[in-house]
Every structure is written in C-alpha cells, then in structure tokens.
Amino acid sequence: MSPDSMPPGSVRSAAALNEQIRALWMRAGGTLSAQERAEYELLVVEWAEAIRGEVIEAA
Image (cartoon, rainbow, N blue to C red; front, side, top):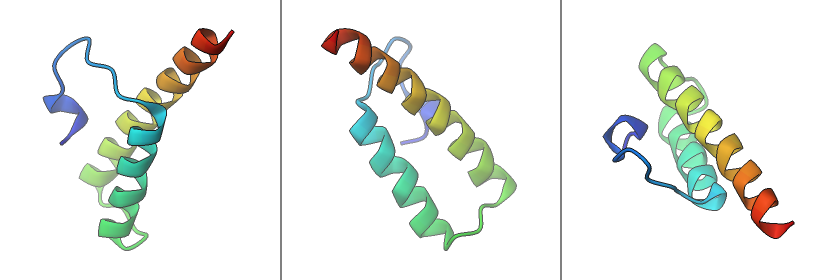
C-alpha cells in the first residue's frame, strides 16, 4: 500500500513502516526509480514520526 492510499490520521507502527521500506529496497534491487524514491521519502518521514510517537508513549 502506498503512503498516499492511507486514510488521513491512520497510524502505522515504526516496525511496519520499516518492513515496507525494506520491501521497497528489495523490490527495487538496491536502485530506486524517481517514483520509488518519492515513496521511500514519504515512508521515511512517516517512520520518523512513528518513532517519535513511540518514544513519547514510552515516556
């Protein structure tokens, strides 16, 4: 599922996002196209937000 197809306010765990990032790299064979790069960037931003949220919850 691409980040664009997620409903607004939907929250995915950092672990789930990490798996998506890894899968993207595996599918791409280590070299991202422009479209894959854009998807990767969105996933990384969402992953960073999820990490921050998990740290705040733990505190």
